[in-house]
Picture (cartoon, rainbow, N blue to C red):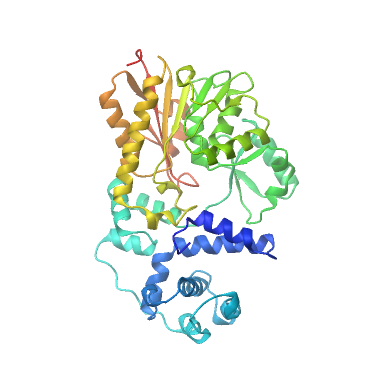
Length: 428
């Protein structure tokens, strides 16, 4: 990963090639990789204060070892007696130039206090390991200090396991079945079919509910995006929904459950690899109401979901390496792509159709700004409040003005955005 590969790919390849590791060891390895990336700025600051800044280390393996030793010390509270045996492997198995004595000093030397930056935003950026520019941008978007710090803190933590219950409306039944199998889980208020696994074990994946397709791993905010695709006061049953950026099919599955056997979900994506994964998931759940036509007949759809490509700033807890790769210029490029995609889809939407524009970004540049720019040029579309669908109680948790704004920790999981755009006059 330190050589530039995406975290997910680097981890998947390393675990694929690793022999003799059990499930618990694999989960620990995955956790460590995410944690070292997640807390990279803080760990590197500690290394610098101890005289071992990353720039002085010859090999990336040395950087990883120093970060690991410091992570075990600072975040796990471990001593050298525990850390030493973990890093004291023979050279051929772990290339490195650092001697054990150096790592022992990293763990045992007194850690000097770091000088605090002048600005509040920079202090938060250091504490929660974010780039300064990104926290400054978020501080402009969320001027309330409690909201900003809660968001940064949530995006700097290992995310919990959230599931969507299938079919919709059977959450109590599934929760009772999980209890019978000894899995501690609870309902999540923000979404009607969302559950959270409370214990840290992975037994849920061995349960009957999981094996019979009654549970789907899905973030709460992602579930809410599918929720706001519903008509006000009605259901999607029997309707046609176009999932324009279906990706790996997470929302495709939810929409298929909502439209039922009498409806249709038309799924497409520019990535063939991700769409192949979506096809496989649809086959796995035997969802005959899902089709993958190319090109998508958008003018047939009653609802068009655009889950637009974005910076993924709402998913940094799950993919922490992205915060070190993002730039302000890249966000501007995403905004251009998002606006073009919304324009393209809107031209084909029929009269009365609903477009749901969504992202997993928490930056207004990719969210409200894109929607407001579109509406300024398209009077044939009207912005509908998501509260009309969510109801007052859930809107209080996950709505900001007319928009879905699912932000942790208020809504557990990642950060998500959605807007409902209704074509009220004929095609432009």
